[in-house]
Image (cartoon, rainbow, N blue to C red; front, side):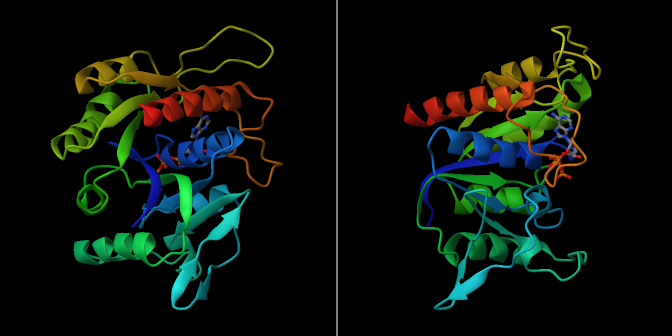
Length: 246
Ligand SMILES: Nc1ncnc2c1ncn2[C@@H]1O[C@H](COP(=O)(O)OP(=O)(O)OP(=O)(O)O)[C@@H](O)[C@H]1O
């Protein structure tokens, strides 16, 4: 199976920044000298290939898949297997087979980290992941609004019930801070991440700012190294790396 540390990035609801976090965290861990792979388990709503601007399709070798590599990160995603962004209409058991396929039939090799970009919520993929990859640890992503953290708690509780360690909560889109000022604007409210961490008995690992996307970039969802968001991703990567050494 997977040879390396496994970190699942989960959330209660969609659109909180799980995929952005998975990719940016992978790049930040790489900055720390780690080898990183991303397994995009958001089978219906894959977005990792788009975030990394990957056009290539994986090749095969002896019946196994060679993951696509972008910016030094190895990636496997349902997005590589569907034609023209067609929707995926599958039932639960097929989703489980895909997790098995992505973990067992891909030539990953040994990696320092496998990041699993999970679909939102507590559906079939989350259930199967908990059964098939019992060694994985989790972070739960939420936005600062209390209602978002209430929903996110379910994903965290599910991990705890299935005996997966939740190593922490990450609050995304916590505030907006202009690059030329230290003033923080709490656009989506405050306190959701802190509250969720205390409900799950874990710690708040990071609060990520809202970052204006550079639409001229080919990868607008990847934080440029000059931004405060990038610095926060680096801090987060350092904290997570320490947690895996314990
Ligand atoms: N810190 C941030 N600042 C500004 N925009 C952000 C930030 N984090 C994420 N976004 C944007 O929010 C949108 C949703 O992010 P993303 O796709 O990563 O969320 P998700 O939780 O993976 O969603 P889904 O559940 O649909 O997979 C994207 O357009 C992304 O670029």
